[in-house]
Amino acid sequence: MLSLREYQQQMAASLLPTLSSTNAAAPSNGQLSPSGLHIHQETIFSALTKALRCSFPSVLKLLGADEFRDVAAAYALRHPPEVAILSTYGASFPAYLRASGIRDRSALLFDVARFDLLIEEVANERLGLFGEPIVLTRETSLRLDLSLRCQRFDYPVDEIRDGCAAAIPGFLRADAQHVGRNLAFWRCPEGAAVRLLSDPAAQFLQALISGNAPEQAIVSAVRERNPGEVIRTVQREVFSSSFCLITSTAKRGNTA
Amino acid sequence: MAHVVLLSELDAIASEYPVSLHCVGLSLGSVTLPESTHLHRLRELVARYSPDLISDHLAWNAVDGIHLPDFLPLPYTEEALRVVIRNVSHVQDVLQRQILIENPSRYVRLPESTLSEAEFLAQVVLRTGCGVLLDVNNLYVSARNQEVDPTQTLAHFLDTVSAESIREVHLAGHSILDRAPCRSMLLDDHGSRISPEVWALYSAALGAVGPVPTLIEWDTRIPLFNVLEEEASIAHSLMLEVVDADAHHVVAA
Image (tube, rainbow over all chains, first blue to last red; front, top):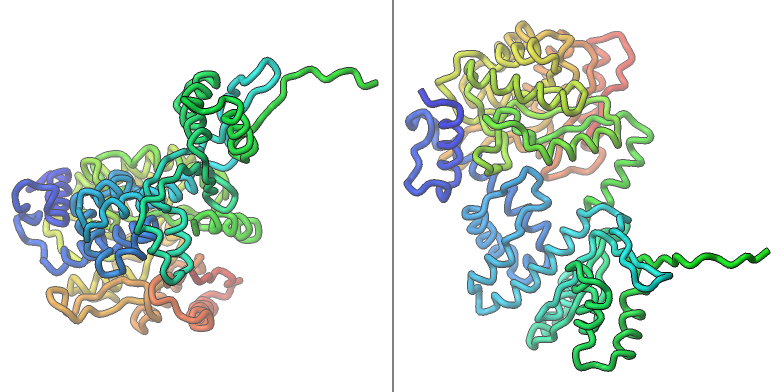
């Protein structure tokens, strides 16, 4: 008789054949009815493809329901979840799409899937938690929202998602050209907030998120640009955003 | 981001009504302990809502770090019993709360089983202090799929599991599969009215257990609200027929 571990390993392999290098025999030496296993298999794949549909709504819209189901099922077969919470399932789905070469649009799908995933991930973060103070000057420091991410995309993914959500006719025209953009994501009461950033602002923010000091972050943002203009851009796009908390440590004067 | 909205709605509901948290991912039958991160997130949820009841299933869905989102069947053996007792005790220790264990729908026979489901559950109750969530539709579906008499199965269940340990009841609709290879099997799909046979079993269960909170599960092919209300009112009527007590225990979801 199989141990419980052996039984569970064999049943998992019979439900997801990719888990085993050989065709797994059903547990109990094949005494399980194939119909029962079929029901479990359908339930599992249905749950996984549904989780991917929820996390990747724009990819679903671009591919259509039938193609998305096929792609999602193929992905689920090779990449079953490693945690119980399905809202976090699909972290490697964008890379899977890029490698799949679907309809010669894998680069677009990769970008759109990354955007969908970030929206989902950030919406699952805690609301209103800020990191340690980063000293800007002797009197001023800033704290960044811990949910903050900043990424560059090759396509106008935010417009594509809006177009998908609103079913705007012709919204896919946007993907005909590469219109790269930097986007910041952070948790807000409604889920995830997204803000378009210029190159210097994105480079400054990315450097800060990576743990660099503000001086180094400014250097990485300036490059061959006008320093004064870069600082004004950073103030306008980063310091004024709700993902950034500016605090003054200056002593107040005696107003009495 | 529906979950964001749901959380705030749940805050509002929990401020007005008692809450029962029903879990699906603890994998109480796995040879490994329930996933620590998942369990600690559940603990946060419990701290936030102070639910009256917390439950999960007598099943497993994780092995070797892979999670399969379904209630996979356990063989009811002494080894599985030791594992479930260890896992239920662990969850109750972390949550500092009693949990309820639900009988799942079964679609496969596991001939290694040396205990009936009721005997297995009774032992888990005895040795962990947990309670039981009796899903009447699951009991019916499992009995029919294993070609045994549902009425006798319920009678055995109620003879074996102590009435006071049964603290919640679930009802649901099921469908009959008509395609190969599952032809004529019953599927617990929560997508239709409760069958007359399940209502009869529910009535019998109420006679033995008394008034306990009852949930009607309907989460696929969701009907108009008045259909759900009609089902809830049937449950309410049966509860009133069986017990001469305050029967405001029926909710529909």
